[in-house]
Amino acid sequence: MIAFLVTIHIIVSIALIIIVLLQAGKGAEMGATFGTGGSQSLFGVGGGATFLSKLTTGAAIVFMLTSLTLAYLSSKPSSTSIMPATVKPATTAPQKQAVPQQGKPAETAPAAPQQPQKK
Image (cartoon, rainbow, N blue to C red):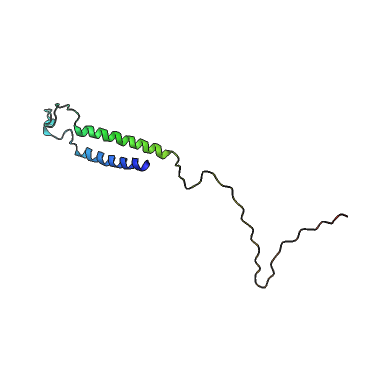
């Protein structure tokens, strides 16, 4: 899901950059400077929304939605984690027996004291 959203986000961001760069500036024509209106303007000086401006608005909405969705999904804890959620209790390692070295007898633990038997 996140990989799909990231892919859509990247595609929309590149498209948004291209769409914005394709648009002409508002004062791009000499006629616009003197208030006579531009030759590309169908509705006069105020003008209507052109196809590129509608496309820019749509791409910006998709960009913002993917941004918000990715931010929300990244704040949730992930279900796959390197560290386990619960800590397992430590196990005790088996005791090692002393290995005798050459020429020396192996050390043994002292024997438990014997208790006298009752008759």
